[in-house]
Length: 425
Image (cartoon, rainbow, N blue to C red):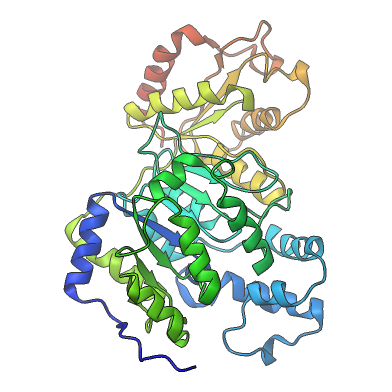
């Protein structure tokens, strides 16, 4: 069956760009990020999925040099059934030690501060790392079959959030690697009782900006319908996808829905132009780096978030881990780096975090902070500022330090602000 020639343009008109910029200003756009943007830093010739594809081809006896153009990691995991656990283990083994720099397009999107909800369709943490490095109070929201679904925080609706709609590659194995996995996730997301209510209500009111997702045909139609489960598909959205032009039927479907398409050029180039046009009329100062590391037991997350918000009122960015399931040396190295970089370490002491209740990650953070305090060359002046919320006995690590009671937390926040103002970096 032949299709009429699509009308989609490679480049947007000035009016198309003006409309997109205007909708971003009015906080009416959510970016949907795919593997096409996961380039190697600023090197647009390499993507994370292409790198993993070449690494994994020998698992099924394929030669990476003989693959057809456009063959993807998703194709490999979908077409070669070696068992889902084996695919997950093979990718996990290669990701644990892979030092993939945060891609430039993700940093550029993170710098557009009118974006408050990003959706990642990939299994890595690169988008969240980009947003977290630039935007204060960034939150990571994970979806999956083995997780309690994360949702937007109604107490802090303006916090920048990254929604990992197909899960995340970690020790749980709870993420989508193949087309069958994506179908399972999207089928589950159709159930109002199983999907995050606040996220999908917001997506139903937004124009969606698809960037490098790589979905076409039936999968693209289905995914688009799931994201806008509560609203009409027509007259909404933008799609930048370099390989879309080869699927004329899907292009016509999108054009009938009123979507604006960028199909001939690079999605990386699209983000570059969007960033350039945005910064030309909305110059902003670089985002602050975290200066306070909040260490807390998971049961004390509410108190930790309240402290984060109190620091934010003083213009201070606090680092805290809002995820619930992490594994592997890569994540621990990230925690170590944050402790080293933050001149203030604030342990939240409670009955939940007391060492008498067992060894936990929070205790490893305490040990690391005490060790870093002895390292010559750690950035700026350093201070450990313990806050006791409910512990009847102080841990031995902090008995020689001045520990502030929870009733005096406002004074502690002011003291930390003054300490940082005196020259800690």
